[in-house]
Amino acid sequence: MRIYKTLWITALVACTAACGGGKGAEAASGESSSGGEAAEYAGAIASTDVERGKEKFDDLCGDCHPDGGSADGPSLIATPHAASFVRKQIREGSGKMRPFPERRLKNDDMEAILAWLASVNAVK
Image 1: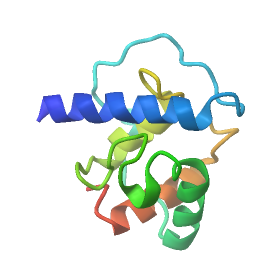
Image 2 (image 1 turned 30 degrees about the vertical axis):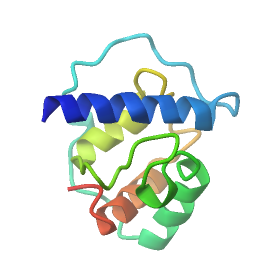
Image 3 (image 1 turned 60 degrees about the horizontal axis):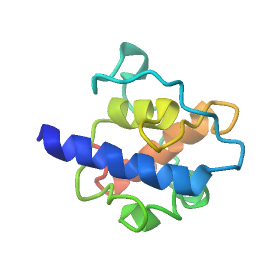
């Protein structure tokens, strides 16, 4: 299971670098992650706005993960993750995936994206 998580993170990181490079994305902090989700990312999904989540996902993530599937990035549907893991991945990035700070992706919009991902079984 850990190998799949590592592969997913690596692929998602590579995808985000390609998708977000040069468009105001923040540089990675240089800190490595142990792969655990911090308490600050824990909690239930705080939105039910699946439609807005799909719109935001298509705008920010769709080039690399069309409809949650794979292209330049890995399929998010094939290997569902906890909401806390996805929040951390979005906010901190890793490898080649650059982070999406709140000034680029508001918390409400991130939660809407999580609601859409849950609707397609990409978040468990």
